[in-house]
Figure 1 (cartoon, one colour):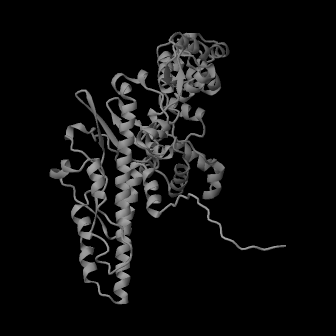
Figure 2 (cartoon, helix red, strand yellow; figure 1 turned 45 degrees about the vertical axis):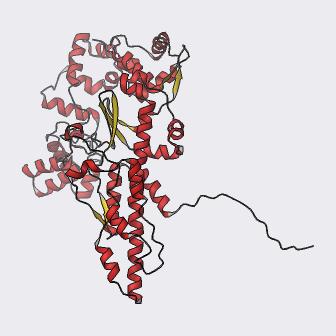
Figure 3 (cartoon, helix red, strand yellow; figure 1 turned 135 degrees about the vertical axis):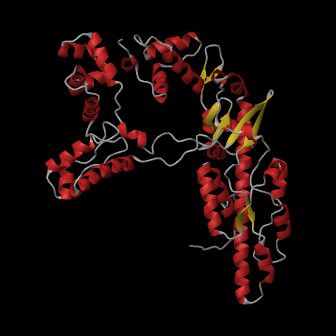
Length: 479
């Protein structure tokens, strides 16, 4: 066997994920709230970072995208070599490096109203505990009541058996049930029920509807009520359709999830990352910098660096300041890059979907990530990160940037229509239908075909489910 030692030269390409690149990618995919939290955390860790006070007079003087990029190029990376004073242009950084982000002057009236800002609301547990403390309960009854309240879900239903609560508090089950009965008289009506039937019956008791047809339907015909099988109710209860209608009207006023009004899971308002305004016949894009900390490097550390000696302790201090300066410049550059990218993606979406902005949903074009990526010279994965959890305020409403991306459906005339437009048409067909004779999915297919849109029945069913619209059997109204 012959052994041979030789050298081979091989050329390969490898992507090196530098810390700065990793940070840029991470910041790009954050939502607005997550970005603010990340900036605040970095400011706590890095003493060189500080927030610049907002100057209304200079708000309109911020540089546009191209000039901002030039300003950002003045920041030089710290190599960690030299005396810590001459290896980077601190003066250029301090004097010329502007505030973070792409921003444009706008009149106060152009921004959406802030009257819907969220405030801290009373929780369900707080509301019930307040009533518990104001009621005439013994100490042991209050402890039982606290257990009951603590085991309610966000809909207001009791998720623990009375036997379990009794064992935990070392009391009898009958004591727990007695306290539970009193809590079920609290506001909101229907609270602390163990199932839907009990929830509705509690509310009916508040309305004085005991011993009525309404009570019998809730007791014995909830399944028929769900499937709108009114014929079976009429047959079993020996009543007319009109009597069933009157009972159903009462039941429809009851709340199957009484605790939800105090839940934190109620719809939350979103703050747009981008505004699109129409000025005359042109659209104008404005990034929303409101609430984003305007970062700069503290000038104090320039003076400290000049006063540090050349002993071992001084060198350690220099290295610490250089490291923090490097982190600060990376963060500011990354935020600037994030804002520029969001602007460019939004601008490209606006150009691709100009007809939608002018004419409405029927003119929304099919568009995929690759269309925007090729337009602005970025990778599809970057576009995906930019459009996730980012919102745009337009004259037609507030949308997630991903809303404008959808597959295409061929029309019989050869054109292509966006799937979102088809969904809107399905929604309109159902909205305008005869509620006593609702269209089934096959009939909707035929209606769409007449307007030149050819899709399968299962596609209609999929879009209907996405729109949270019930099938025809459950949409039917008998009176």
